[in-house]
Amino acid sequence: MGRGCPRAWLVGLRTVTQSGSPISAADVAKVAHLARLDIDDAQVVHFTEQLAKVMGHFGDIDALDLSGVEPMTQPYPLVNVMREDVEMPTLNTDEVLASAPATEERRFRVPPIVGTEG
Image (cartoon, rainbow, N blue to C red; front, side):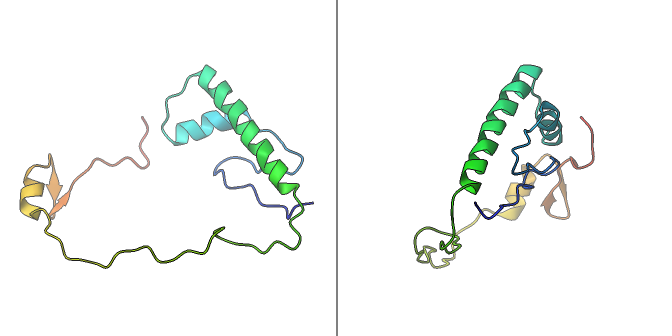
């Protein structure tokens, strides 16, 4: 049997247990609402079916015998692929802010979205 990987990674959804408790259409609709996605009932059903299949695959993975397999973050050794920092010309802050619809304290002013309905 597998290690019992926690499946609470879908924020706002109930944990999918090893018994394979399915994701419900209400769960999908709630996450879509929280993500501000406008999806219709047919799409909710479609995405619910797709997510149930994905969760089923997690069950397959969880059933694998992983004794003797060391945990890893990457399957291959990584070499630092970052380039050296090089100073490059940038846009003029005043020119960029002059083209913005609204600014505040030399920053772009954007409408708030967190905690608003709509």
